[in-house]
Image (spheres, rainbow, N blue to C red):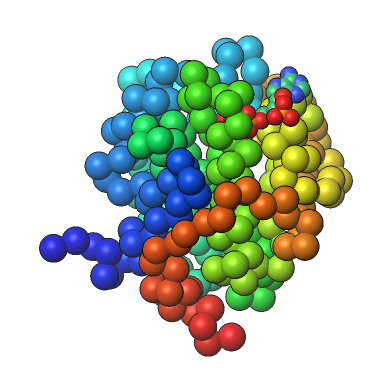
Length: 216
Ligand SMILES: CC(C)(COP(=O)(O)OP(=O)(O)OC[C@H]1O[C@@H](n2cnc3c(N)ncnc32)[C@H](O)[C@@H]1OP(=O)(O)O)[C@@H](O)C(=O)NCCC(=O)NCCS
């Protein structure tokens, strides 16, 4: 027996050529922890709005497991976060998330992602963003998708530009202790999406039903 019939996010699978987005089930969490411990960014940079990646090594796995369990506990039509492990040619390389609040009204969801450093710079980040955008527009009926990157994160900003996002204002944020950083907001509509390889999706019907999207 599995939880998939009861918890639709566990039944999702998005494939696009060699790329596969799989749900972060419990068996995937330790693999992701190992990947994160190998390094996501140089120690002197911080791409994340919440600087989770610089936790002491002995705490990172605990924090990551608790984070994923929290996302599941809070999952529902009013607020949800879909967390995917990213496999490229079968190998786990990173994470792609999509989260929303009051999606039935706003039709807007925000993506976030990371790849282990050894897998960066090979076009995988672009492919996974194209895949999650296609999923959001085609399967969930999003009107707009958003992303955010600090202005000193050229790789993420380049991915957004290549995929078709427009800039949507900046925000002054506290990043690490005592540090001011400028966050660039980005947004994309379906007609602007520069699509990659076509996606194949399993499990979207059960997810739409759980999120009450078929009722609208
Ligand atoms: C952001 C991230 C997901 C992008 O994935 P990726 O696989 O490295 O990205 P891609 O290879 O698809 O594309 C990166 C683009 O950025 C460009 N780029 C990378 N570093 C750059 C730099 N210093 N200056 C200018 N452009 C840069 C690359 O040239 C490439 O564009 P191109 O294909 O036109 O040449 C990945 O780098 C990552 O995980 N970084 C650390 C975590 C992170 O920043 N997460 C996002 C938080 S907002």
